[in-house]
Every structure is written in C-alpha cells, then in structure tokens.
Amino acid sequence: MKKIKLLTKYSSLLLIIGVLTFLGACRSRETQSTNSPSTVQTNNSRLNIIKERGKLICGVSGKLPGFSFVNQNGEYSGLDVDICRAVAAALFDDPTKVEFRNVSIQERFNALKTGEIDLLSRNATWTLSRDTDVGLEFAPVVFYDGQGMMVAKDSGISKLEDLRGRTICVKTGTTTLQNLADKMRKIDVAYTPLAIGDEDQLYNAFLQGRCQAITSDRSQLVGRRSNFPDPEDSVILDLILSKEPLAPAVVPGDPQWIDAVRWTVFALIQAEEFEITSENLGSFASTTDPTIKRFLGQEGSLGKNMGLTNDFAARIVKHVGNYGEIYDRNIGKPFDLDRNLNQTWSDGGLLYSPPFR
Ligand SMILES: N[C@@H](CCC(=O)N[C@@H](CS)C(=O)NCC(=O)O)C(=O)O
View 1: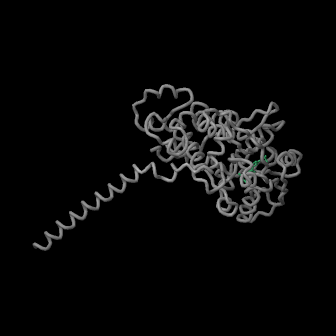
View 2 (view 1 turned 180 degrees about the vertical axis):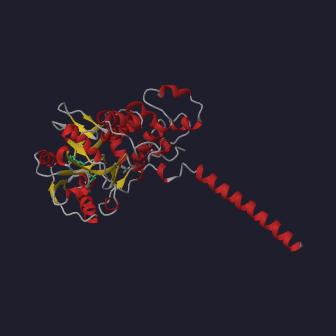
View 3 (view 1 turned 135 degrees about the vertical axis):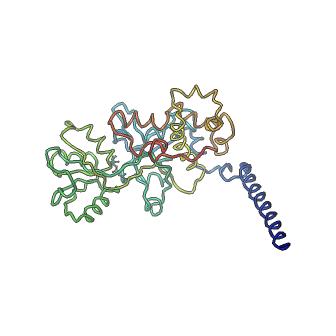
C-alpha cells in the first residue's frame, strides 16, 4: 500500500516536472524570435535583391483574360497580376513597383530558374513533378481550378463519351494533354488530339471547326469564350477532368523570399476572413481585437521578423484589397464565375490561412 502511494507521489512529481519542461520549451521557442532562421538577414536572398532593385519582376502570361491580360495601352489586369501587385505593395508600399514580363507556357519555368523573373504568377498548376523534378517552390494556391471541355452549342455533345472518334483541341506544354489522355483512357474513349502550342492558333482551330471540342482549365475556357465573336455559340460542359490548383512559384532554397510571397497570399485570404477590405481598412485603426492588431502590424513584430515591415498586410489590403475583392473584380464580375472552392474556409471553400501569430 505504502509502495503504491509512494509510486503515485513519484509519478505526480514527474508529471509536474514534465509539464513545466514542456511549457518552458514552448516558451523559449515562442520568445526565440531573434535567433529564428527567418530573422537571419541572408544578404543573398532574392528578397534583398528585389528591395535594392526597387521593383519586382513578375512573370505572367499577358494573354489570359481574368488572370493576366495586357491591353493595347500596355496595362495589365487579372488575378495573377494582382498577386504580383500585392507582393510589391508588401515590399514597397507601392503596387506599381512591378515589371511584368510575358512568359510563354514553354518559357515559364526556365525564366524562373535562370533568374530572369523573381516570381512566376501564371496559372501554373502545382503538381508533384513540378515541385520535385522541375524543381520549383510553390506558394499557397491562389485559384482552385479544374480542367474543362468546351464544345459548339449545336454539336449535340454533352458528355465525354460523345467525343468518341472526334478531334479535341488541346494545348501542348501543359498539364492538359496528359489529363485528357488519362481520362479518356479510363473511360475507354478513343479520340484524336489536335495538339497546338500557340494559344491563339488553338482557339482559332476550334472556332474554325477543326476540332469538335477544346479542353483547358475551366477558368481559361470561360475567359477565352468571353472574347469569342459569338460567345453564346459555345458551351462549357458540366464536368471536370482534373484538379488544377494554380499557385505562384519561386526558385527553391530561399526561405526569406518564399516566406514573403507565401505570407502575402495568406494576408489576402486572412484579410477576407477578418472582413477587412480596401474600403473599410481605416476603421480598423481603433480595433481592440488583438489578433487584428497583430495582423495589421499595430502590435508585435511579425513583419519585421521576416524582413518586411510590420504593417505589410495593411499595405497589401490598402493597395490591392483582400482576396475576395481581387476575385470579384477580375473573375467574379467580368465572367460571372461562382467562387465555389475559391471561398475562405469559413464560407465553405478551401482558402485557409494559418494564424498570424
Ligand atoms: N494550369 C495548367 C494549364 C496552363 C495553361 O494551359 N494555360 C494556358 C491557358 S489554360 C495559357 O497560359 N495560355 C496563355 C498563353 O499561352 O500565354 C498548367 O499549369 O499546365
């Protein structure tokens, strides 16, 4: 009996010591910020190169309505474009400090790896092989897309099986060709791919009737169709062939730079969750909510610890808006495209930022 009591006493003591050690460990980790790797100012980080240069060089398509489109006056717009501007806003408090470079599908990854661009913001799908084999580092997903199929309205085609023996226009150098092959093989439907590398030629081939269907990321089909002479003559089928999580990318091995891009994207998402917009940002100057104070840099040193300013999230929202504002002006309003998966988790979507603390 005595032995049992002694054992109980001994194990309670051990438990208390254990808890104290654990708390101590947590505490020292939380307060270790001056030594944490992200605070070490590595001079050769691309973040410093960009700061010294005074502008960000961002690789975009320039030909994708809704994502990155350059008009006749050389003005850029789109969701991918606004991601570049958000990073510039975080770095320079000025969203115009970006030089856009149009990079083709074939050039896009090389442009990043040779250092020609700092950031690739060009509807690139995050896949395992691009992450590993190709050697890219992806920031958080900015648009959850899926591959779709467009046909002429009067074609009578409503499902993939109707495409047996038909020709399908598909772009080379993308995830699209393999997704199509995989899907059709799975359902055992033989077809002829008409693979074309140039985007304009590809859509022209469809409009000229050289193929009975055209397949691409759904968002792109919607965007391109909006520029057709008679958009209502084409329909996008109600099916999804693949998952296409589109994300910005950088060259790996530069933690400071990827952190800056990553937390810029998260700031856009978190601002929407907090319901902070470019319009109402000013009203949060007097907020008493500690999590919002930290987010906007009114308290703490989250931004400084990563080589930015403490108010980097506020700068982003001030100049570019939150994720929802970016979506609405570039995609939601112009193309009447529902947000679906591209809503914050609190609204039932997949956009989720880790905590700003
Ligand atoms: N998300 C896919 C597809 C990308 C893709 O096909 N993009 C096309 C449109 S869906 C494009 O960028 N077109 C414009 C251009 O070539 O400049 C990928 O990363 O491979």
